[in-house]
Length: 101
Length: 503
Image (cartoon, rainbow over all chains, first blue to last red; front, side):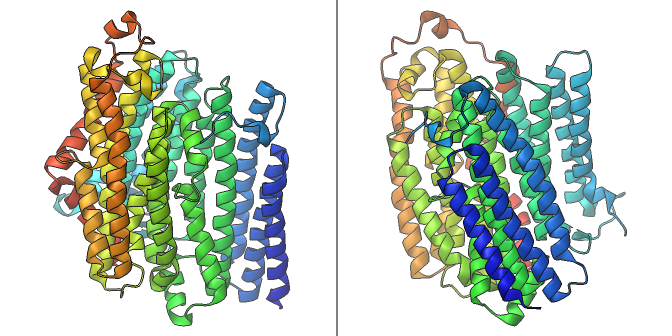
């Protein structure tokens, strides 16, 4: 099995996620970009697991945990975004500048 | 599989309490009963910790040394016991601080205590996890509920903003940490800390491992709000309800440090060169930036936010001083000891500072430093406490902070390298800078004229909620006792330093 291609794909998806987090204005899109980063992590874990033929399947089990916890985090995040949208009718992260240095 | 239920008892009791708090919220009783149940449950969880610690001298207790479960991924050793005890005591004090605060405003109470205790459960599990899966789950259990608690003042735009900023940074840092872990897994093929250390010792360092270690440490740097990854801290601290801020600054930060300690010393213990230099930089920037920016703050909680960044930098100093040092167990243990001591003392004095500020801002209805002026004239008790906790944070004997700084300097200089010495010099300069802003607040509280914003009604209203008095008393006793009898805290942290000598 050739790991390199998957590694490059994983790194590219992670970098796309980082780019999305930095450039997107809408909080929901930022959240989606974070999911992209976590997707890259899962890809890495599963690929390495297969490459090692890990008897405990630790990588695959870890990726299941990551998926479950990411789902919980999205739940929390959407609740917070909804709250902000109710109070300001906007989920734009640029407008959250009440507090500054 | 054979489970050691005695070793798991604190977690079991705490998990039971978490559920019980939710059930209490359903019952037709006053809402503060949720807090009472939470406080009793947390106190009950401390009991098995004591029986585990003094297992040798108890008849019914089977002494088995270090209790290792789930094939070494969950370990209850003396390090875990001390830090679990710390987290539970912190939880007790934060619960006591929260009761009056939540009763006084329009808050959802039952869910708040549920989330707070769930977060504490995560911290308690964190102290025992010795593999990346359980550590990640524990880390998310610590931070997840705090995202929601930061936004607990639902109608307040600042609180909303605090929650969203904290949430976004929190999930990004989790993703960065995980990416690092996935690369480490890719190089070593292991997720258990001890196995990772063994695999690194056999295979040596590689570029991929370097990237993995750096990402993992940076993920933790976000959690412990080390500069330059601190930008969420002041905003979140200012916007969140003050008891939540106290928990973030002490409980959640200490949990991050526990994770960092175990990962750095156990998992990456055999490749110290990779992380020590990184932490050296983090320590130096955190101390400098935190202290310098704190000077010009006008809001007291925001100032304590920057102060906590700086204190985090001081805690990182013993790690950073290990750069370019030969790995003798003695030096490692000294550094470990210094960080644990600092965390314990920091918890007592910082919780005390926050409790005092809650009491003060209840009275003068303001969190601005200029409104604190003249506090000593009409509330000498609170002003006295403020002075004690702030002098402790600044590191002035006889209150506890000086001893934390002493062991920190001792370990940095004792490492015997030029880099360690340089870091000690930076820390010394910063300790002086820090006194400028702590001293300014205390001076203003005692010697300046009372501003017009403080009405006569506020001056005569000397009522402090009884739970808050208890919280103030506990932290005051801790701060004084640790300062006057440092052997109290050294016996704790020496007991806890078994982790590093186990290397």
